Length: 462
Image 1 (cartoon, rainbow, N blue to C red):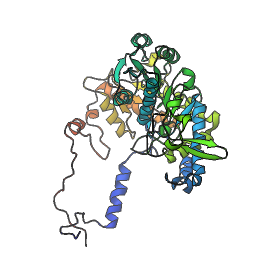
Image 2: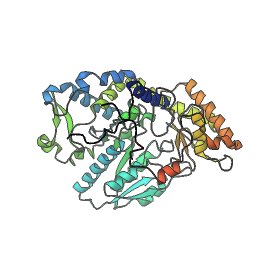
Image 3: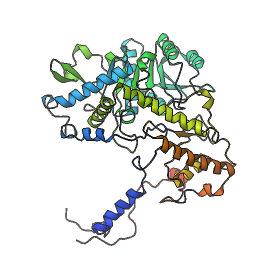
Image 4: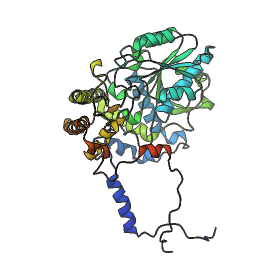
């Protein structure tokens, strides 16, 4: 183990190192610095109260292998959060262990497969996915071994219910639908779709990533949904993105509850116990198994329960009302400048969707996005959903003030008008950011994935 070559570290003093990382932090953009309009990501302010609760030693230091009698408080948090998730969704049960949205989707699909196999209908191998669904929906179905078939959207951006009904049959296991959908619209025919799928012997999976637009106002269970994941890290507190911890509990209907995964927390007398393989017995013998080694993301559970209890029923209802109000404020404030393909479809839900139609020749969404950086804003989601050419997806969330939205609207209007006028300076934006415009095509086609030792550097003192 004796060293035979230089250590390979640059010769930097402590002040130089500190200044390097401080300089990098000042070049970064975060939700604590300004508005983060990413659509389908719900980048919103995270209440500091939730962070304080999650950092309490009894929660932050808990270990999954501790004896159950030493973690009764943690299990009670999981049990109480599960109760409120079931109550808010109008469903029968919830699996708390999935670690994020796509993991929750897999959980729901595996439960659907277990239910079909229990009925002797395992030959159903088709999952129908509308065009307006999140991209993880067809990916999850394919990962679970199903064949995926697309269902077209109507001109107003919602599921073509007639086309979906026409495709139902004995080979269809179910439908995966995102509601509110990726176009920012509520699927008004959800109950009719669910009834048709059930009549054909299938199940309905709902992507609940956009639950913050309907929490406190709509119970998915009332819409005939059989399984739906909830992104705790989006709807109930922690900003999404950046590779941080997530949590994607899945709520189930009565039809799928017997097939939900282990483990789960159950109250027996005055004690909370974990139901796992060795003590599932007959009352949960139909479970398809387990998703993870342990019991879920404790930090996300604590934050989410704090968020729910501090808001209360009226506060959670206001969350969805404010999210929808803010999105419609942006949509209607800019639809005279930017093309809003589904603007005539009625009020949007959690996000406003625009396209690059009407820009000067040679200008597109990416030019507007780069121009926004010079205005001091993180760009919105670009080129998604794929059903809209040059899509620009803006999600203001429920935590932004009218003053913040007015600043963003003014900036986006200014950049859009420059793009419509063919301002050549937009083609080289951003000009005031730490980095100039990068060649994103080259980065995607010829990525540099292996670190190579640069020219010899001065060595740190031994």
